[in-house]
Image (cartoon, rainbow, N blue to C red; front, top):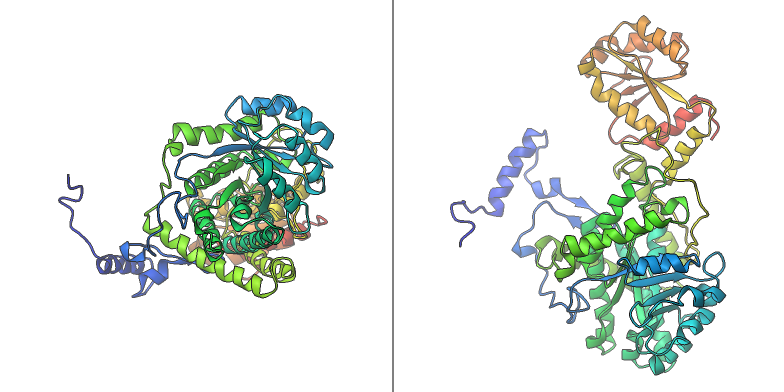
Length: 576
């Protein structure tokens, strides 16, 4: 059956001609529509509007075979891994009895006490449910608990061979615990500090190479050392970025193995964790959508194990409900959506293959730069500076709402009710001296400040003209001010400056924003602004562009929303 029968074939040149016409109607004059419609990632990877067969970078191989782009294994599905940082055996068993297939246990001060680890795992069949440890300085003691459960135990001890006991533990794993690995290369601190995908990948490969050197210098063969290392990456709601990142990571590690003459042992073990940086404390229900997308991307990208963070992770320790939602997110994708029955469903996509190759190329260049600086430890300053630069670029995008955060910088619910009472904070992972940020935290700090006032600060929307004329810009302005926790009060329909000024005075506000069409602004903006000044307005904004007498500043798509909000707090005499 020819599915394309009856459809006229079209070339790239034909598409280009059509695209030029559409762009011209939008006011964009160009003869290069690909350039006009392309965007660039923080790594400089170009995301084009159209891909075809010519964009394929080459043969990515087969699943389970070098260079492992299409998967380190030749089997579908992934391990559902839940994180626990509290000594709660009942919660652990509830997870394992309801879809979770492995455990990630945080052990040490502020988490699961080492002497309670045995009790937590008492009824867990460790030959069936692998355990991954995150124990920091207590890793030796925590590892002994797993060693004491017999040679069938499976998982990873989460140690480091660089300045840690990873070599000693790896030797024991090789000698008597074939299902256990000793070393985890955790790339999430680079992501949580604001790094880009290529920066996260390059740093992880540099760290992996440092671990590999330490293990082989300590007497392990290259093949044995490769088998002792697992990598942990962040998965975000940008599904194609995450898919490409995980595929590129495997390609990079396969290259390392190839250079070490162990090409057949370079299948990277991957544990993907939904991003902490993308999570929000405000409107946390939206986190369910973010983590679903991230989990989908991690599975499609070929991660062997996936952890979905509870949607209320920013509010403290999760409860039974949020853990249930986290594990059921994975069950839905694996079982109901059928992702657990397909290997590398994105494989062969011209876009995905091209993006994977371009990302791998930039990550490899960054890895080489780190190596030239003496390796991941000596290059700590270089890494911190590079990530700080990316963090600043992303923060600027968040502030200007070019990178929108639903429920926070866009479509906030200023009167939202708390999901649940706050609980103690979750035990945090080590960061290696890097900061830990969340993209939403600057907006959320303003929301907290507004909530803390005896009465919620209010901005007056001086709507001019009929409802049909002012609604669009009034909604835009309200959305922006509410992103900072500020309430808004509207004048209603009408164009009489004195009536608008009277409504402003009754509202009790000291900041106003004009909202209408450009045509009505030309007729009334100056008069309304003057009346508002006379009524006591300290600041008069205008929703839209254009300069008018009496107007102090403009709100528009792409303006610095954080700067506007901070200035408004100052004008409202709210101490920041």
